[in-house]
Each structure stands twice: as structure tokens, then as C-alpha cells.
View: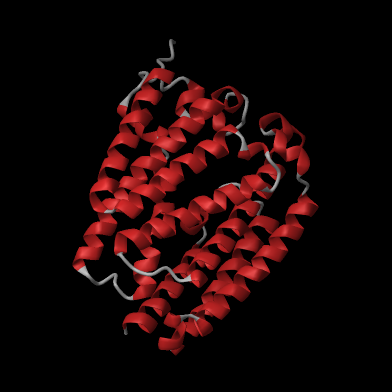
Length: 296
């Protein structure tokens, strides 16, 4: 019986190429508005919605371009070989066309909404190009570059909302994203074992012990930084009950450590809030406390 292959360049494959599951990260554009108390302003919500959609287009283009660059190595990866380009479900020409269209659309919307957001979006694209072409193979710089991408999302949100960005918010964002990036590297190293170097050369410069030490240090600093944020920042001083949100943050990070150390689940941190109910519950409790403290 002949097995029929799915059609090349189908709509489903093109959408999958942009990795919609990763778009959740772009929710960080709303962080500055939430902590500044302006998220209830309808104009701010509209600007954030347009900017968030534009950032999803830009990040989708980044993922498509990254997969174009890595399609040869992805074909021999146990999981990544099923990606649209590596599996042949999307042609290189279609991927280039999709990426170009998404970049043009995303930048046009950003330019319409905010000049500052347009500039940070350009920086976001440049940063990801640097990561794909060079930084992803540089030990430590690879995870720092990933964390900088999260930071640019928050800064873009500050321009979209037209609010002052707290240095505490930026520090917490950077440290938390760095913790997650290190956990992801650890998950990749564990999942691929000796084959890890064949898929990414920089893995030869990492070891589980080295990553564990960095995760312990950065994770501890993240909790300390967020605690100080709730006490010393402008939002914290104006809303003393914000300190209560430290509890779900500490639990959430410790739960994350449990998942990566005992369940070896660090390779895909973006899926953990969906697949792990205790972690999802911690996030929901944190959102409830922050909402009550700032808007109650």
C-alpha cells in the first residue's frame, strides 16, 4: 500500500514553521503596562494588541529563518527532524517568502504604532540574526543572547504602552529568562547525551555540572531580585501587598527546578506551564496576587 506524503507548502506546514506555541513569549510586551497600572487603559490595550501581533509576525519570521539555516543538522536530530523544513514539508523558497512577508508586515505595524517599538523590533531582528549566524555556538553568550531577546520584548512593550520601564522589571526579566535558557541547555544535553555535540558544537563546552552551578546561581539571584523589586520599586512601595507575590514565584522556580532535575523536562520550557498543573497553578496565583495588589 502506497503511503501518501502530505502536500509540500501546505498552510498547516507554513503555520507550523512559525512555531505558534512560542508566541506565548510575546506576552511579555504587556509586562510594563501591567506593573505601571496602565493595562486598563483601552488605548494602551489596543496598542499592545497591535504590537503583540506584529511581534508574533516577527518572531515567526525569525523561527523560519533559523530553521532555514539549521535544516541540515535538524534532519539528524531525533525531534527537530520533524520540523517543516527538515522534513521537506516546506520548501526553502516558500520559507524565504514567508519570512520576508512576516518581517514586512511586522515592521510596518510597529512603525505605525510606535517609533520606539519599531527601533527595538529592528534590534530584535538583528539580535536573532546574530544568534543564528554566530552566538548560538558561543558558550555562555548563546544563553545571554536568548535572554536579551526576552528583554527586548519587555522594552518594546514599554514603548507601546508609553510608560517608564522600571530597572527592577528589566533585571527580573533578564534573570528569569536566563534561568530558563540554562535549564533548556541542560535538558538538551541530557536528552541527546553523546550526540549533543553533533547537533550543536557549543554543547562540547557545557557539562551537566557546569549548567547546574549556573542555574543555582542565576536562580537564586532571580528570587532575590524579584523580592527586592516588590519591596523597593515604585510599584512595590505604592502597593505593599505586592510582596505576597514572592511566594508563588519562589514555588514556581523551585517547581521548575524539580521538573528539570527529576523529570528531565527542561528541553522545552515553553510547554511546562501547559503540561504541569502545579506550575500552571503557581502562575495563576501569581497573576491573581499581582492583579489584586496593583488594581484591587
